[in-house]
Image (cartoon, rainbow, N blue to C red):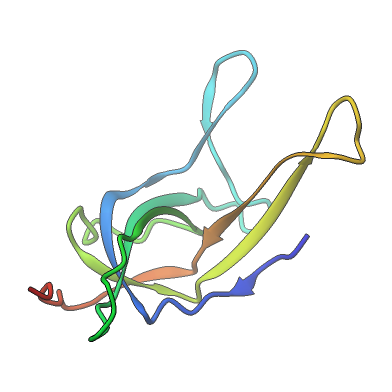
Length: 128
């Protein structure tokens, strides 16, 4: 599996749609606990951003997509919904879950984003 592939998002505007919050995990018994980094011992956070392509003249505007981004710690309370941000050191990771019946097959696969932090950016006016 590919890990920590650098991601260039300079062709997108990123707007926070869910403010940073503690990342949690639910155990089989239903208890919920915060996710803690194994190396640093810090509680991890997650932020949801809407990634919309920057308009390019002569091209049809893209729709965009919401993505969740893991953060290594609390980015602070200055980041709220509706705010435009840049991801610091953004990377993407892939995962595969083998099929329970035939482990040679892949039952599920996907990717997840992480960044070392958030940086506020000025809001850019939407193209008419």
